[in-house]
Length: 189
Picture 1 (spheres, rainbow, N blue to C red):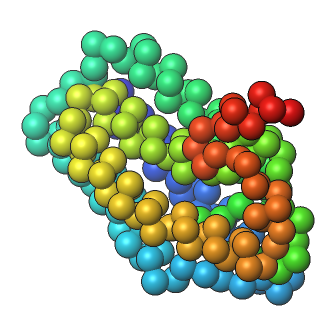
Picture 2 (spheres, rainbow, N blue to C red):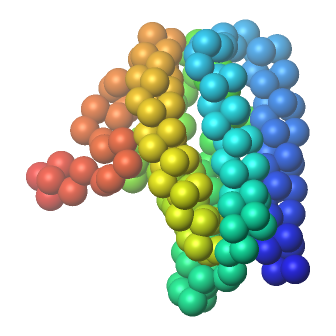
Picture 3 (spheres, helix red, strand yellow):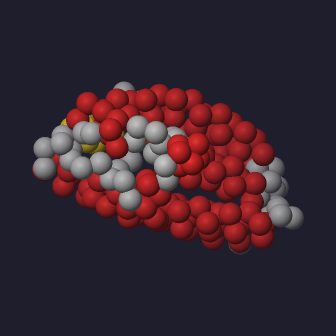
């Protein structure tokens, strides 16, 4: 029962995010935004969809149970959800699951984007580890962590290229780390 509630809440959250992303997409394209990365987007959607299918099947078919470390994992999961909300609300109408760039728009550099370039991708990477570990779904964790690394190795360069072409992204994020704060740069300031 705990498993079904947990998965149900996450799936509800993701569907809600897709609705928000669609509204943001319409608004941005009405403002003249351009979409990039259409070639890899279906693969990304497939990976995230397959993650939930794999997770559910591994737990149910292999009889996995709640981890002995669930309190720590749940705390980490709740932390990632707070960070997710912070990242999404920081981007506001510019947040999307697709790469949609409004030419000449000011680059968002607030919230977690003050610290690292891609907080949402870092959050997703952590979730793909923590969610399966909550129920000892080690196969799902390993496979989808690797698939996420693969898709992000395509996605992030495409996103950064599009941002660099249409905004002042390179200027704004010159010395900022993708996933880890650039502490050396902070010490020099």
